[in-house]
Every structure is written in structure tokens, then in C-alpha cells.
Image (cartoon, rainbow, N blue to C red):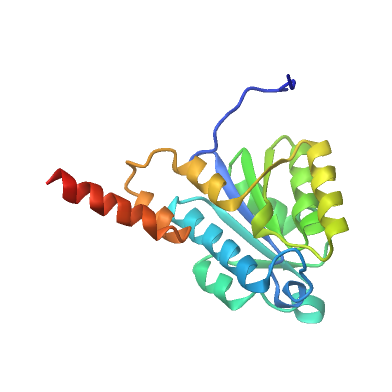
Length: 207
């Protein structure tokens, strides 16, 4: 039986924040563990669901004007109203403006996604743990450039105590109750239209 350092404590709308790191056009072109279309879908869905759940969102780029280009347009649209902080540091948490924005959320549990997985998601997630937060990484809303990088990044994060999951599970965990008024918007954001259809069928049968 595996030893658990701490008992399970659920993610909620009150204790979680989302940190999106470097989903930039130049980096997207190098991703090899997901297709560009699938990765875009997953990141946008994550952002939309987080907004539906009223999570604080911090978004950042690195070397936007010199190396890696802007955030991909579909994500910019999904993040409407969220400023994107540009920085030069490799580790997003090393940038004072990003660190201030993260700390200003007041949230203990931080959900990260980034390109690349083993750097842009892993470094700030591991730093967050060192600063007393709980860190989660949405693996399928991140991406990297080879299978070796993916495997090494996942192992390193696990060794550091980062919790790994997929984007939809994290958002559904935060939803917590399908009776919440946000449920429809969350499932729509996650591109699960059958959830709405099943609900409509159940309502029709109840009439």
C-alpha cells in the first residue's frame, strides 16, 4: 500500500487557480506528443472551464517579441479579459510580475499547464511546492518536443511531489456537484455536449 504524506483535499472554486505558461505559436510548432489541433482544443477547453468556475487565471509568455511569438489566437480569445504577462526568465515563477500575480490569487492549489511540459509547466510547479503551495499539472494541456522529454518531465515532477492529471478531470473535480448552476457551462467548455443531451432526456422523461 502506498504511503500518503497528506490526506486527499479536493480542488475547489475557492482554493484553486490556473496558471498558463507559454502557449505560444513558435513553441506549438515543435510539439510532438500531441497534434496541434488536439493541444489547442485541450488548452482552450481548460481556460474556458476555469473561467466558468470563476478561477483566477494567470497567463504568461516568454520572449514573445524575439523568440517564441504570441499566444495562439484561440487561447487569447478564450482568455478575454485576462492580461498575458511577458517575461524573459525560463522559470515563470522567477519573474517578479508573474510571482506577484500568482500570489495575489490567494490560492493554495495551483494548476499549471505549459509548453514545454518539462520546463514551462514543471519548473514553476516545482517552485510552487517549494513555496508552500500544492501544485498540479494538466498534462494534456501541456506539450513537449520528444517522448524522452515527456517521460523525464513527468518523472521529475512526480519526484518533486507535483500532482499530475488531465485537464477535464481537474475541472470536474472543481465543479464537484453536477447540480451547480455552472455545470452546463463547464461541460460545454470541456466539449462534452452529450452531458447536456443526457440531462435533457432525463428532464423529458420526468415530465
